[in-house]
Image (cartoon, rainbow, N blue to C red; front, side, top):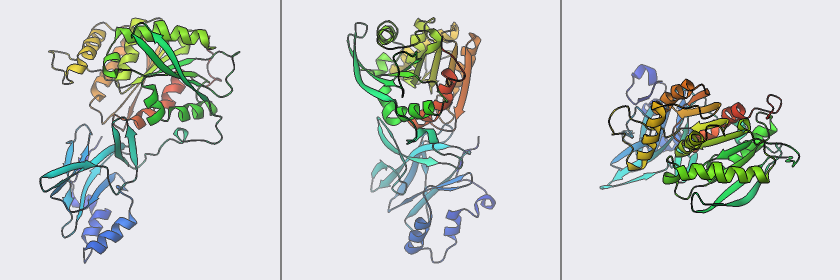
Length: 393
């Protein structure tokens, strides 16, 4: 993997658009206007991505979270203009999120790129997005008028003694849902966020329509206190396996077998999925673990994640010391630009040592909902392949 920023031989960058602009005479506001009118920002030229900002400022920084690069990369002002730039070299197929930090008169603020309309949304807000050469949004993640839509039912309320509250769960029923059929069940942590930020319903509709994935029922779970309930909580695991699962299997025509049950989660939701399966190793046939927050320590107690990660580290350390087969198969993925890439790579070998079948994918992306969305076809076609390939007993 090659990641560089604005320290390169002139022979390799002489023909970049920003370098051609430098050679223009006169280099003035009109020249900059014409330059920006001709180019989509960031400017992608082979592996090189040129980020731009226009405005009066003392300093400007590109802010991103790519492991191996500084979080804040200084942009350079093009002499005689108010145009700032920096060039990153990104591997083919990369997708990164970023913002611009502007400093002026002892004041600074972080903003989305005013020159780039592409943004990504999350519970924390929005950020700008750069698509490097070779990245495209999967067509199966976009609305398809030919795909028969499934039905997203209003929230089901499940009283939970384990959690001491009523739990709201949304249900997805596939197109042509029939009470006489038998469906596998996908349990999705952070369900509303997957629906809102990862286009989960559209993805399910399309993948089922294209026969990539078997018709499935999906339950979208939503935590009340995410960092507590998803950090190896026995109460949450008990709710999922002892309260929610029996309710769903009593109300719906589900396969009701190990091979027909899958837990899915991203980040802390992946920890919650593994923890629930760990406590009931004979219940779930499959796991989908996306950018799991599998923080651990090999020596000492300094894991760097803060107190919220303490129960996670304790659980992962225990699991690594005594690995247990908790499912038949696991789909594991992580973005290579995430700090979590090293622990996720390590967990693959731990899972395999138990006899679990593991499908591992590394994405040229960060810790984001679109990264997790883009993994859904590989993940779901692996655990619940199309109906012509597998029969759920």
